[in-house]
Every structure is written in structure tokens, then in C-alpha cells.
Image 1 (tube, rainbow, N blue to C red):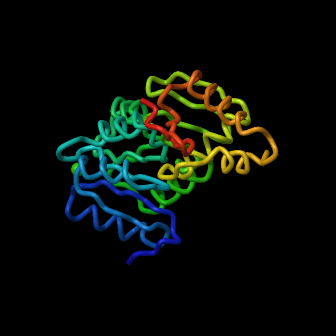
Image 2: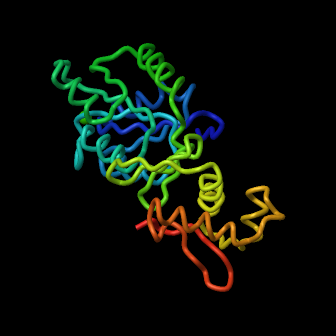
Length: 223
Ligand code: CA
């Protein structure tokens, strides 16, 4: 049953019995979507917003550790639990090192899985608060951008507000007037916007903000 008001949980489990069983166990608390292999899990993980992930370690096509590592490299910060049939400490360490927030050994207790999910999602920064701008991760709350290579760039309040406006409507071309109004400075000279754009490009990347001649600005691909 589709219940959009529940937190969305991505479950990646290839076992044809265990997958639907775990989905059912969690269905009261989460809107669970089940993917049966690592490739499908990666696709869903990258293309949709999730509140939590439960990922089996042993998966066809791409295993659970590769999957978590690939999601983290792409900036997906959604809390994830790795399920492993292997209880060895080395496997747990490998899971955590790959970017998982927690792990559970099979067979596990359903109540414990639910409790660990609750604990994990209680304190996390929602992935939605980080915005992917052409591979750069923009964190409006902390006014920072992280490059695809992990380098952190700090922004001023105005630069951050401007970038947030542009990134919030990636399809839209903003006039300078609209951007000024959005920054609550409708009376300032429109050249102020050009100055902020100049600084953003200088700090981050020339293609972070696209000039649309005769119209204004649009978020770019950041490349
Ligand atoms: Ca498996």
C-alpha cells in the first residue's frame, strides 16, 4: 500500500522471501520500496529522496558495500543500515567504512531493526537539505559547498541565498529584478546581482551560474 505521509525507506534485498518479509515488517512505520539488486538500488537511491535505507550486503550485480559507497560518493547522505549474513567484525568494519551508519547480522530481530532505524533517523540531517549542483553539494544551512573531490568552499550569506534561490528552481531563468526581490533587496542596484554571481563563479566554478543573454541567470551544471 502506498502511504506517502510515512518516511520513505529504500530496501535493497535480493532474497525472494526475506525481501517482502522485511518490507512487511517495516510497512507500519515506513513507505517501503523494495529493490532486488544493487543496480536497481543505486538507481532508486540516486533518483528519489529517501529517509532511510536498509541494504543487504550480498546482492547481485553490485554488492551492498559498493552500493553504499557509490551513493555516498554521489552525495546521498541518507542513513543506511547494512544487513549482513556475516557476523565477523571485519565485515562490520567494512560496512561502516563504506559509509553505512549501522549494520545488523542476519538473522535479526524485527524489533531491533525498527529501533535501530528510529535511532538512526532521529538525528540525521535530511538529505533534502543538501542540494546537488552539478556534482557540488550545496548546504544552505551551513552556507558551504563541497566539491566532488571533497574540498569545502564557504559562502557569504548573500552568495548562499542567491545560490539557494537559483538551485531551488533549476528550470527557471531569473531576471536580476526577481533575484533582488528574492534576496529582499528590491531597491538595490541590479548590478549587485552581477557582483554576487561573479564571486560565486570565482569561488566555485565558472559554470555554476549560467548567463542567459537578455534575460538573466539560471543555475548551471557546475562542471
Ligand atoms: Ca542477499
